[in-house]
Image (cartoon, rainbow, N blue to C red; front, side, top):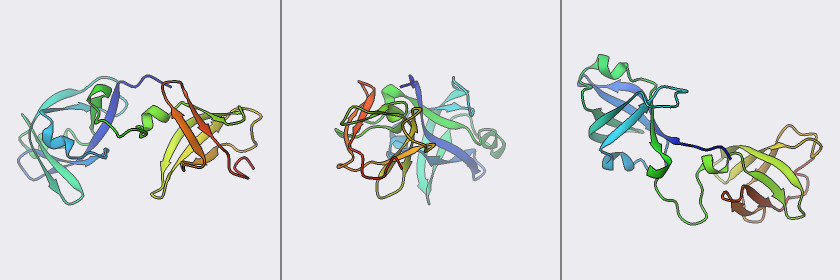
Length: 178
């Protein structure tokens, strides 16, 4: 599992109005976090370190997005310069999840093992389908002819998730490796 330092919680997609407000799309199950934040850390896409930290003067909901007012961003031009910036928080600032729930970044890179001890491969992605999540496994050579194995995250298939130990334990359904 790779060491994650920053986690995306939002993305600036447009300016809003003429006072320098920015429209963001939340990338979090906890959009209410923005009303409690004192500042936001903005990152350019692909950057490891922040572009800047901006004090948060206000936040409000507008349709399917949030509108933020950042200190010293006072015009449409100022706001437009921030378009496509990502809002990230440190791993320590994440909202706690209920027991048994995990953030996607905690699952990427975990080894997928069967109850019989077969090591299938590594989780490369998590698809959120609505009904249940699906783990995308990049299989080890010789496990299957498939380029990826799709594991439904349902109680009868995913038996244990152990990020601290580096693995997920599964009971394969008939035909998953065909």
